[in-house]
Image 1: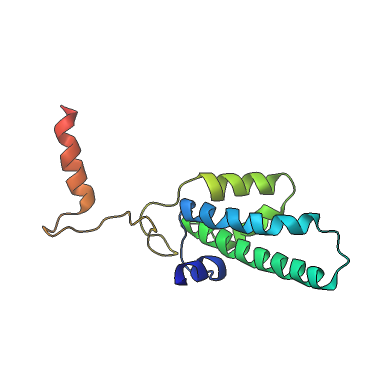
Image 2 (image 1 turned 45 degrees about the horizontal axis):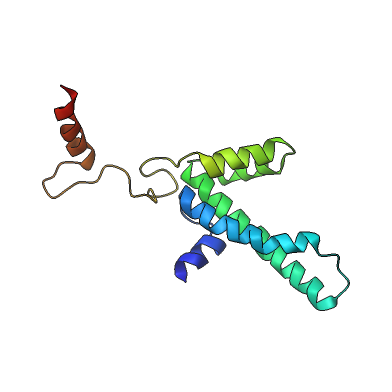
Length: 137
């Protein structure tokens, strides 16, 4: 539950692309019926408003964490509101491009990439370079 709470309500940390899609799609599916609701019933009107407010808040939280994973300021979220450019920017920057490898100014890599030392004092990257050097002839 803590992971879902962090993903949907927190603006802290970085979020990898996979998790972004795993949370964004259900939020979108949940809010879709409110687009088609015509109104007229007080309880359904209130429910529609509550769902919409939740979806807006959760989307902002998800988008900010993805921007941080791309090593971009959360202020880049403003670009997503621009007509024509915004949706394309959001799709490419948030949904397609991979995050910054290793730690960045917003925190550690959610995929766990980066220079980590193994038990022998060598970095994982150095060990990988040694392993691939054998195949380079």
